[in-house]
Length: 182
Image 1 (spheres, rainbow, N blue to C red):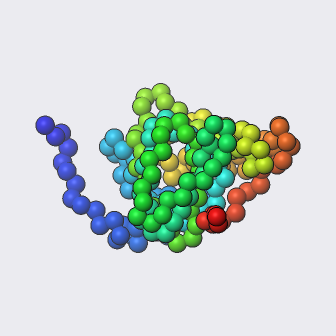
Image 2: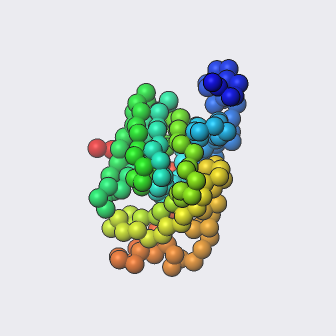
């Protein structure tokens, strides 16, 4: 027996238009719903990210407008997964992933709320050798603000935090995302 009143349908196109000005780099997210079992948000391009999110639950991507890609780390190696307009992608739990959204792209993302005690992490890998350079764990409360706060801490810290121990390359701030060419 339902215990909560069911909401009416959401005009997603209107919601995106009304909230697009709030979706700013580096992350460019705006949450739609957070009060049930799911976190539902829209992410617009461009974003400027070279971090990788590690989520203890699955993450569903639906690409509404334009083509994007998600950088993932699999078996210690990075690779790109392109999501074309109209396509969906389900990222399994614990897979490091970095959504890359070029300008004028819009996607819908759905995640589970985190189980009690489960922690997310944000990682930075060396772009030269894929070595893990930095990782911060946290208990997710507001994805719009949490990711931005951790990124600001990382970029505001000493250069030594951003330096790869393996090859000594220093991680530089990300540039605006662009779709890779073949």
